Amino acid sequence: MSDAVHKGGCRCGKVRFEASGAPKFVGNCHCASCRKATGSAYATFVGFNAPQVTWVAGAPAYYASSPGVSRGFCAECGAPLTYAGENWAGETHILIGAFDSPENYAPTGEVFTDEALAFAYERPAKA
Image 1 (cartoon, rainbow, N blue to C red):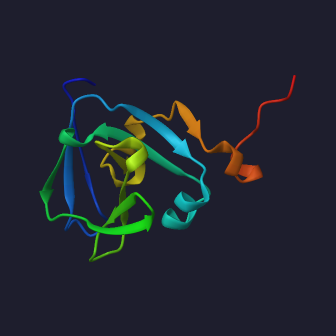
Image 2 (cartoon, rainbow, N blue to C red):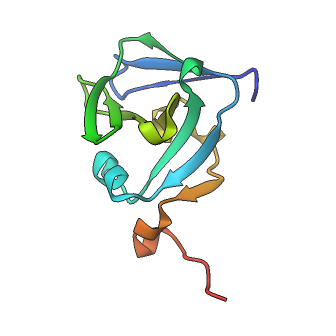
């Protein structure tokens, strides 16, 4: 995937992106903030270094969802697209559903599992 160009965009097509090279990660975020931002039980992100991501049509609008966090979305159709935060400076995390071929990205990790809904994450058994 190192030479790959990953393409996607919002539901209406007014905002389109390309991300070049291999993603840094693919993972599920279980935090309450991501649940509210996506309307889902958890959010699956594909992370890239910010310079890997280019907006090729339009650009997202941004909402400061919490201190140090900016979430990108399409101002026309409302589709959520990205996450960027001070804790991961220099990275752009793109929601998996925004990709043209989301089946190409399998999550390999889980974060903020302490906030996970019981049905959405099976906690490891205690030893």
